[in-house]
Image 1 (cartoon, rainbow, N blue to C red):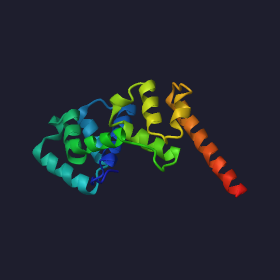
Image 2: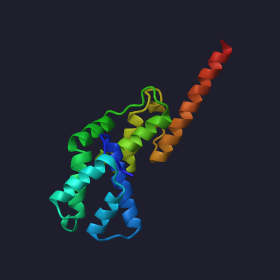
Image 3: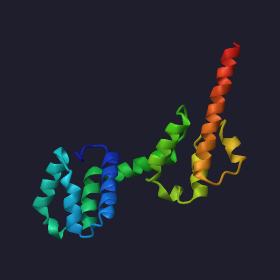
Image 4: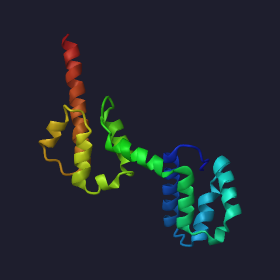
Length: 170
């Protein structure tokens, strides 16, 4: 279901989910894609779609035009720019590695050119990690993102264990 609203990530997730479902169902005709995509609209999204259908004949709207209208309403360029900047400036800070990795993955879709290959993705991920972890991971010459995440998680567990032992000795 898609209600509309102000959260652009929800809109983008909805559109991605619809695209995946339509591809798996092998729907090829644009007007059928649009009918199926709008079938789950509720509340504000349903009202918005009614306004659009007053302006356009659904049969004459291409899939690309539908997506353009949808994104203009629910995910304007200013939001994309803001999310791209959030990715560019993303650092771990006080987040656990799992939370940092989830944000990294979620926001990376807005700056695909920065993670277009494994080397760039690994470098960007490591560069945002806690300053104590970075040199340890850089020195290992990690080539795969999954390996970088796994090793960062291991370093985090080790750091927590070390801190627990320190507290135990006090």
